[in-house]
Image 1: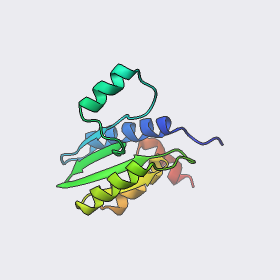
Image 2: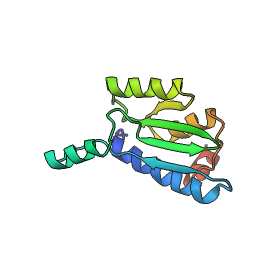
Image 3: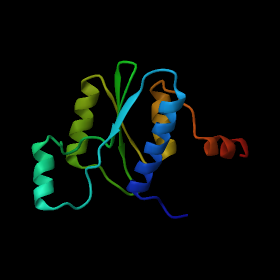
Image 4: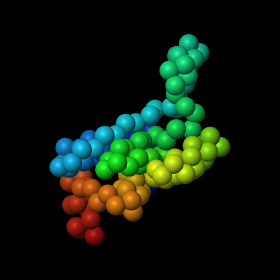
Length: 130
């Protein structure tokens, strides 16, 4: 089996969070930062002027008065120095921060942080057949 790209993992996590938003009976706000890929000089300069911060996690979730941040990486992806610094600052400020390499790892992090959110229907079917 080939490993998934970071973009594919990002899409899977976003699809799951949309599902969770619909299923939860409590407020949940999340956003995703797409800070990778090639852009023209003008676009990159505009994004920086607007406040794009180097190292900010891919997914930020606000739930029950807490900030939960996930940095998504492909199987062989590595954290940049800026990502490590931002992760440390988030944690020192009382937020949660972790690196996940799949939808399942993302779900495990959130469960560890007290969020036992619903799984996607295909995940339930797959886990029941194991």
